[in-house]
Length: 49
Length: 525
View 1 (cartoon, rainbow over the protein chains, first blue to last red):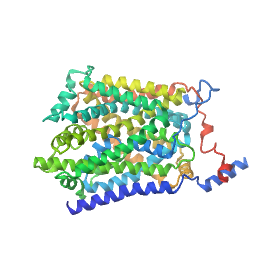
View 2 (cartoon, chains in turn purple, blue):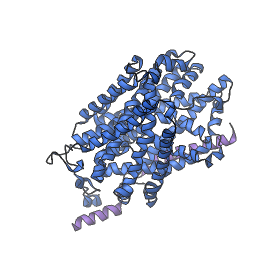
View 3 (cartoon, chains in turn orange, purple):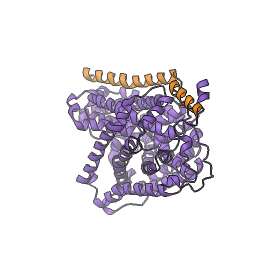
View 4 (cartoon, rainbow over the protein chains, first blue to last red):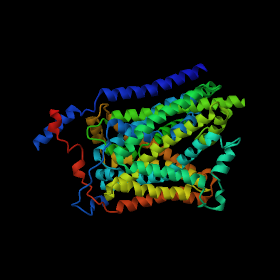
């Protein structure tokens, strides 16, 4: 294959498939949190009402 | 408007269905995004718009409008907990009509989309005997579709070879969707998507082992850097991302509305977005490796081949390749099965957009809504698209509903949350409150300025093109019916459906923000 084509193919794979792997890892590592600050604010607001 | 005129104020809305797991939602979202366009559109678009250099505008489009609009859909669906009309009515009663516009656009797409799946099933079967013989083109247009010219008028005579598989497609979709979100769509996509990936990897690996495959990859990936200076190339990248991600016309709003409150919205969006692009890239590699083989067999350059995209790529070029390659029959069955699997998961999501909207507005059960929507779509499909002029009808409706219907839905959606009922800040806070990946103020600018600007440019380009020159040289009466007429029909139906009464209250207060979450309990967790 032509050098530039190989480079571009590898770059595309790295970025897109790498992005997929990274986002899966991120999703697994951080179990759906509520933003603590937001939650605390809302709880305070609720207690004031 | 009608959002406020509830017929039965005392009536309770049915308990909302929900996904069984985050993985189930992800599979369904990925299944919706991965469709026929990933396999037959991306490779050709990339090749025609800079080859390897296309990856740059493509990535910018993915990060610049694809993922941000996907997050917007998730935020609206999750925050306002409804199908597009209900969610938008909860944002502003006047916005309900936009929700129905999205539903009608989805309905029109699903009516013709099923036909292509019927072709794929037929071709999986034809692959066993290489039924197309020496001339796949004549076989496809003549023997299989039995295409007649539109000059003789619209044909309502069924082509039985399409009619049967199409009816089978609709029965499959009906059965799956009627079982509901968890037992139907989620259960089906959990099987279909992994199966699609495995089968498609087999296709790609086989294509890569063929002589000439590297010529195909060279053709696809050799960069034409000068293309980056062309506005057309950038528009093509944005259009590819926009049309391949199933965004901005109600699908993801509907799917996100079935998520539990504690859901990682942006994290799921990143996975779905990158999974969609990953599959496109895989398809590009597989398709161009196969094209390289064909060029090698014919002793020509890959660039000299024709039919790089769409229907002709799948149903004319690929049969040619299948006929000449080793293990062609097996390859053919798997390839067309992949087309079918990619398409049916998208079709199920389109049906759910419409069925979900009717469930919300008229308090129908999932079974009833799916039955009515699927039967209506099946009748439309069989009457218009399984006929001798079905191909031309499909071509025209597809072009107009995408470049006018889908894009106007996206433009008005982004303008609504930016100017009409400004709430980008609220939606961003909602995303950040429940997700691991935090979006910043940049998201507001991308949704408020960049996305509408790019979409408007795409819209103007499409409309000017259709006005300046009759689309595909079809007669004006034909375009008036299947082009502008389809768009007009969707608009009229959207207005009528908006004016009909809700069977249950729209109950905006109960679902706004995360008000119904017990925050003290959340803090204690």
